[in-house]
Length: 499
Image (cartoon, helix red, strand yellow):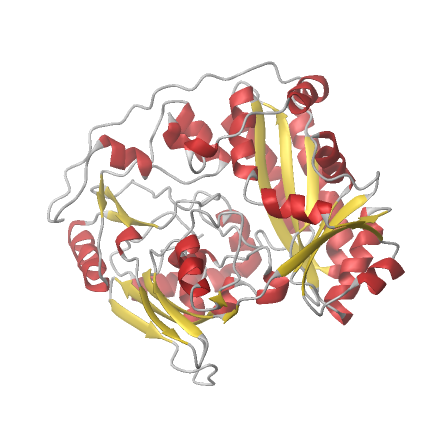
């Protein structure tokens, strides 16, 4: 049953006794939920694809992503989103051939990178299709070119993020992109989902790093980006960045790289979330801006302390990561910050990729655990923060499972910031419906407050309805027109992104 879990089974975590006690005392979690063995329907016949892997192991491995809903469905034994086979191309032309065959036979194609989607981005619609093929891009795994003069690197889409960093570090460079999915995500996945890394204040979001890309579409090849900047019409790269495989399959990405430099992390305590918010806004707008800047609210800070992580002395914990020569201490102190030294920063750095493993342990224990995020302008941030928190508390509380809701600011800009929520509650008898109700309430609150439905998780299936409201009917029509142009047979990741 290791299929429906995050990452490497060897790195699975065991809940500390303090966490188990907290789950029982505060949330009424009653005990483990046993997982059922998955049951697969026989694969539909898929003519024409050379070397297609239809083994149960391959189909299960490509059955959805890594959202809590994906994991709960898989652990129930039902695997409705398993593909009928897995194609593993190793070149751009082989990807084009897969799309040609799929269009000819009306077979849905779901591109797979590291399979870390948390918004239903790998659950294709089956209705109206002869079958579903998972397009595993792990065979496109080469560094094509490193241009040290221009400081760019061209990677094939299937290169895992750790491997990309290893190759760049060996030459004295870094991409500087470290989302929580870093250990398992791929370069192409970063592009297709418009990813944002933990050091985005210092290195930028992934879409800001991309200077060129190549994509295979149902109508042929797109080669985009021939100069650092251009006024030659709208930037068509932006149609592929964040498109989640609905318009084409990104096969090659050229990214800006930076010289490798060490980051130093420290912790700061603020008397309240509001006080800390003013401090991080000041750094974002007036500097000096750290490369990493994160601020936890009271609930998240308290839970961190209760579970043995960093203690901010009853306040709100901020993690600040700076390159040598950048020192925001005076400005943080000006806004009421108290320095906590290097220990909280080092603890965060050591555990920054561990949260998904903790989620598995919480699900095993009978708790519901999931995250969601948004972003808005600074003037709306306090209102959005409260509205989404209250919506989650209300929806889960009304269902008889009052939650713990934690939040932190994880990415900052001159004009606004993101809010990242973590929710933990006791599982109900139907935890999938339980989370859908909570997610709906939160999505409605995000939309009503004027915030974006997602800052860095993508749209997938889960955010489509709110995305349609966000871009309006004309925007929806534009997307459908692009779909028709690049995917005339409508076989690329159907049911994803497009309202």
